[in-house]
Amino acid sequence: MSLGWLSAIVHSPSRLTAEQRSGRVLTGRVADLQYTDFSMRLTIDVIDDDLPPCRILLSTRGCDYNIQPGDLVAWKGNLSEIHSLGNPDEMDYAAYLMDAQGLRYQQHLPLNQVVKVGWSPTLSTRLASVRRNLSLMVFNSRLSPHAGRMVTALLLGNSRHIDQATRQEFSAAGIAHVLALSGLHVGFIALVIWWLLFPLDYLGLKKVRLIVTLGCIAVYAVFTGLSPSVVRATVMIACVVASTLFSRRASSLNALAVAALAILIFSPSSLYSVGFQLSFITVAAVLLFASVSERFKSRYRWVNYLSSTATTSIVAMLATVALTAHYFHTVSLMSVFTNLLVLPVMPVLMVLGAIFLLVTAGGGHWQVLDTAIDGIDRYIHGAARMVNAIPGSHVSGVYVSSTGVAIWFIIMALIGLWLYRRNYRWLLAAACATVVLLAHSLWLDAHTPQRGLVIFNAYSSTPLLYFEAGKGYVWTPDDEQNDSSAFAHIHAGFMARHGINELVMVQGDTVLDLDGAFFKPPYAYLMGRRVIAVGSGRWKNATVDNPMQLDDIIVTKRFHGNAAKLKELYRFERLVISGAMHDAAPLIHECDSLDVPYINLADGALVIDTSTTPP
Image (cartoon, rainbow, N blue to C red; front, side, top):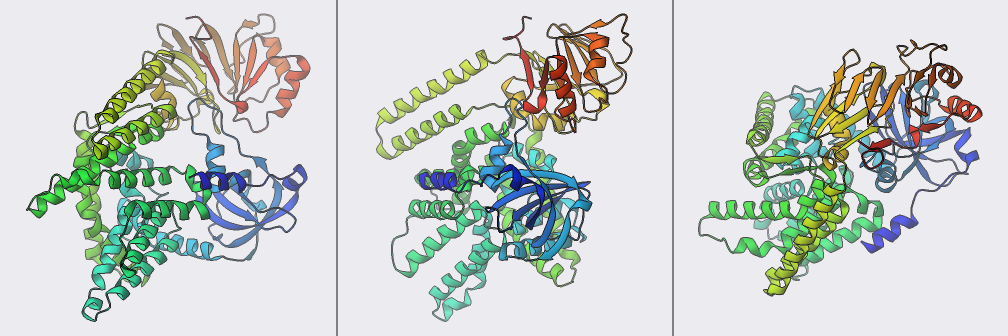
C-alpha cells in the first residue's frame, strides 16, 4: 500500500502550460468511449510529441457511432482542469478521475469539431473494441434488456450499462457484488475450466491441467480489462498453482499480498478505487476469520455448505459494512439470506452466458438459452425484491465518516486478535473502541444542523434545498425538470448526514407555506432571507419607481439581463450566480465594475444553516 501510494504520487498526471492546453490542434488516441442520450464521453491519450504523456476527458454534443477505441482524432484544444462541483458531502469527482483514471483535464465541444484522422490501435483498445462489439451483439439479441446487461457485466466486465434502479435494488439486498466482475466470478470460471480439463488427469498430466487453467484465467483477465478484483483473483490462483507445481505450502494471505503488490506496481491509482478496497478487505477478512466456519463442521455436506456460505457472508458484511455505508449510505441486514438464495445460481448463469456469447458471436441463436438466462435473471431480481420488501431488511440514509471507517477497522482488527490470541485484553480494547465510535457518531449528530438552506452547484440547473425536521424541499428555478430519486442519489451523502428521509419537489406554479419557510416561485422566504430566482422572465414585475427589497438574487442559467438592470429593480444584499451558466464571465466582470456583491456557485455551493443564521 505504501509503495502504491508513493508510486501514485510520482506518476500523477502531468500539468500542461496555458499554451499547451489552448489555441492549438491536439491529436490523441481514443482509449475508451461512453454514449449518453445526446453526447459522447471520450477518454483520449494525447500523442503529440511536444507534450508530456497525458490523458484527457473529451465530451461532445452529439454522437458518432463510427468512432471506435484505437481511432486517432484531432480537435482544437481548449482544455480546462477538472474541478469538483464543491457541494457539501459530495464525492471529490476531480480527485476520483485523477486518482482512478489519470484524468486532469477536460473539454466539451460540438461533435463536428472532432475529426477522425487515423487508426492506431493498441492491445487494450483492440480488446475494448471486441468487448464493445460483443456487448452490442448481446443488446441486439432476443434477451431481455435486464438479462443482457447482466450477461455483459458478468462475462465482459462491462457493468456501466446497469441502470441505477437495479444497482440500488441489489445494494439494498446486499448482493451488489454480483453486478461487477470479481474474484467470485473468476473462481466460478476457473472451476468450470478445471472441470472441463479432467481428461488430462487420466493421462497423467495434472500439472498441465493446472497450467492450462491458469493460462485461460490470465487471458480472460486481460480480455476483461484487468480490473483490480479480477487481477487479485488471477494472481492468487497463480500462487496456488505455483505452490502445487513446486510442492510448496500455499499461504492464502501471502497470495493476497502478492496480488495487491502486483496491482499497485502496474496501476498505483487502483489504491484509491472503491472496488480495490472492498475486494481486498473482503478477502482478507474471510481468510483471517476462516477458522470460524470450521467450528460448524457437520457430516452432512449440505449443512457444511449452508454454514460456510452464511459464515463467509457474515464476515464479509461485517468487514465492509462501514466502508459501504461511507460510500453508498445503505446497509443491508439481510445480505446473508439473499446470498444463500442467489449464489447457487450464479455459476449456472455464467456458464449459460458464456455459451450464449459463443453462439451469438457465431451468428447462431438458441431459444432455450434465451429462456434459461431470462428465467435466472428474473429469479435473481425477484429474490432481491422479495428481500427488500421485508420490513427492516435494509437501512438507507446511513452516514459514516472516514474517521468512523478507520475506528471500525480497528475494532475488527482487535476482535481478530482476540480470536487468535484468546486474550481478553483485546476484547476489552475492542469494546473501548466501540465506545469511541459511538461517541464520535453522537458528536457528529450533535454538530450537524437539522435545519438549513443549500443552493447547489450543478451542471444543468441550480437546485435549491431547504430542509427541516428530516424533510427536504427542492426547488429548481426556471422550471427545470428534477427527479426526486435522481436528486437523492446525487446528494445521498448530504441527506444521510442531515437526516433527510423525505423529499418534496416544489413546483413552479404552486405556493407552499411552511412553519419556517414560504415558497411562491420565483420568490421564497427561507432562513430569514428574501430570495428571488431570475432567469425565466417572471421576475420582471418590479419597477424602477418601486424597487423590491431582497436579500439574495439567484441568477440562473436562463438569465439574459445584466447586473445594472437588477440594481435598478431591486435592493439586494448579493447575487448568487449559477454554476450552470454557459459563460458567467461578462456578468462577473460587470458586478466587479459596479461594486455589486456576488457569490459564484461555480466555486462551490452556498450553505446557510442555523449556525450562521438565527432561526
